[in-house]
Length: 360
Image (cartoon, rainbow, N blue to C red; front, side, top):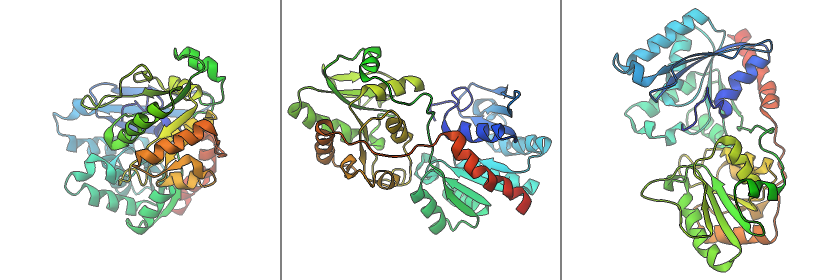
């Protein structure tokens, strides 16, 4: 992923261990960086929690062979002697997690924050089978969406308990703010209607649908501007023109400012193995900022916006997206969705995780 779990303290990969530590558990996290930096140990322990992060760099261990990493991980876990092992991030980490749990005879929890079978790793021979095998060994599987939980139960034939736990957001960062102030901070002109999104501006993430819808919107609604933030493909850059504002890749707190500045937010998801089972975190980020949205009607979004049908457009259909954007700009409808913070979410699931020690 583009964000660093330890240094950026990003989303559920950081918050699950952090909140468990705040609830009184001694937590140590072992990370493998696929980049060439951020190797070492970070101790976040204080009077409120015991939380330590260890990071090894793929670049640093590849000379000895990446296959040596599970054995290094096992040795570190033997020293720590955990009661429960939780694995997340991607296919290798889920597989290594179940292998270490079996070696140490410890309960195993698999956290699937996306459909990992939609990742490029799944094309590596045997990776998909190894993932499904590892998930079947877990006493508890946590998924980011209900459709993914259904997939794990039906196709993976999970043996343990399966719970849907959508990612949430930092409600201290993402919240309601005066729109004019946010627009001024980003250098956007007043008295304009702004639509936009933030995140990876890639074709496989559905951005082409947004760009095609913009071609219709810009001709029919001259007072509307498009605002975009995030990395993009060099061979598929954002649209140009004086009514398009590309802000680059924003720090996470400035993404909140963007959503506070918009009139309508857009979330385009394609009907793919990834899209059908993901939970786009920016849905909660936009809603927390009290932003009207238009979202592809696929996967978890159908559940989340079931009471706001005017916010849903047919996935991949630029014409329908343009029509729904015009509707939301003219008659904005705010989805009424309760957003719990990370503390509440993890406090709710912690008894289930802790009970695995007793059951094992």
